[in-house]
Image (cartoon, rainbow, N blue to C red; front, side, top):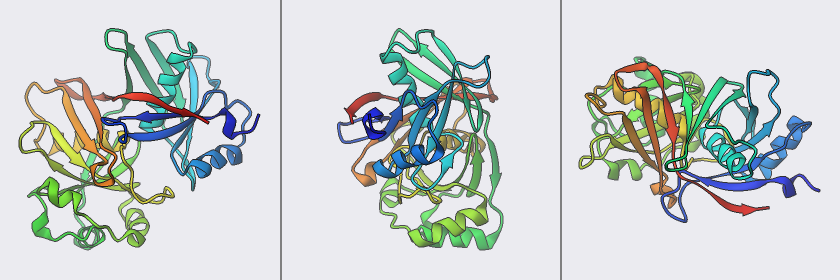
Length: 290
C-alpha cells in the first residue's frame, strides 16, 4: 500500500461544505520517517497529522505534525481531526486521552452528550510589540495604516506557538487585507512569531471575533482555520479587556476571505482563572479517503 493510500482526509472547524481546514491524517504512522511524513504534507499542500504509539507509557498516543516545509510542534485542527478519526474507528474509546507532542503533553476529552471533542492548550503569555520599527513593518506587510487599527496594542500571544495579533478596526477592512507575502517570513523572524493574526470584533455579537492567519513559512500563504492562533487570541482578547465577566471564552471566525468559512470555539478551563488554560473545539467531518 502506498503512503498516500493510508491517508484519511478530514475537514475541521467547517461551518459550510466549502469551509474549514482540511487535514490529511495517518492513524498508524509507526515506523514512518520524517521524509515520508513530509511527503504527505507536500502532496496535499496542507498541515498533516500522524498518529503513533506513545513513547511514555502514561500517554495514550503520540502525534506529529508536518507542513510542506517543516515539522511543527503542534497543530490544533490536525489534532482534532486525528482524535475524531480515532473515535470513529474505535481506537479511542475512553472519555479522555493524553497525547505526546513536540509542544508537550496535550489533553483531550470527549463529551458524549453532543459528540464534542476538545483539545487542551496551556495558559497564554501575552507581550506587547513595543518596537516602533517592528510595528511599522507589521502594518506595511499587511498594507494597513495606523487608522485601520483599533486603539489596542499589537501583541505577541503564545500558547503552543507564538502568533502576532493585530487589532483591525472592522471586519470589512480585515477581509480586504492584501498582504505583502514576500515580507512575512523575515518579519515573523524579527517578531519571534510563527504568523500574523489580524483580527476584528463583531460589533453585533459579544465575544465573537473575525481573524485571518498569514503563517511565517508553512508553504502556503493563508490558513482557513488556525486553532492555536485562536487560543492565542483568547488570551490577547483577555489582556485587552475584551473577554470579561462570566463569559467562558470566544468564537473565532476565520477563512471567509478565502471562501472557506470556519469557526473555532476556545473556552477557558475555568472562567474565573485564565491561568488554568483553555479548550479548543469545533466541527469535524470526513472529506474523503485517499
